[in-house]
Length: 116
Length: 111
Image (cartoon, rainbow over the protein chains, first blue to last red):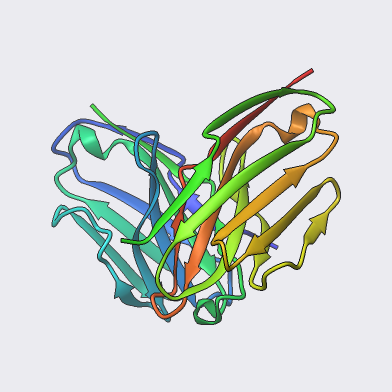
């Protein structure tokens, strides 16, 4: 079975550029999560969706970050304009029936983002 | 503020040793505690613990939850170099339906 698929695997861009990260969740999963991982702050939840609807975006650091889920099989996380402090590994995860708390989240391999 | 704290942050042992990793939590509406192993890429799921005192076991790994004292431990016996990784624990919050992660324990197994 295909797991969570993220693209690109690595992204290096200059400060001020727009960055778009992509995620395809596991088929049939109804929850999708975006995380950011840094050495200083560990793994932080940015936003999550249920049935394509954003439920909690309280972890999104500022207005430069936005996320969409136009359908059940695709989500994007966009940073515009990007800044060096956005450099991190961004993970997407999905789960089934997350509301019951008895199904684990499955993670993609992440996008390593470097903003110069 | 919801908080999950892991200790130690880093641990280096020799192959064959037994290790115990700790995870304590202070969160609202706790539902379950999860353990993940992260090598070079994605965190991979190990255990989900919902009830106190019931040990979950998978090969050389085992874990248990204490909901009264608000902590969990992950034990690895007869460690191997392939066990080297960052081990993450996370509290699943009911209602908020999200995971709050600890900082992770970086485990290094030397041959």
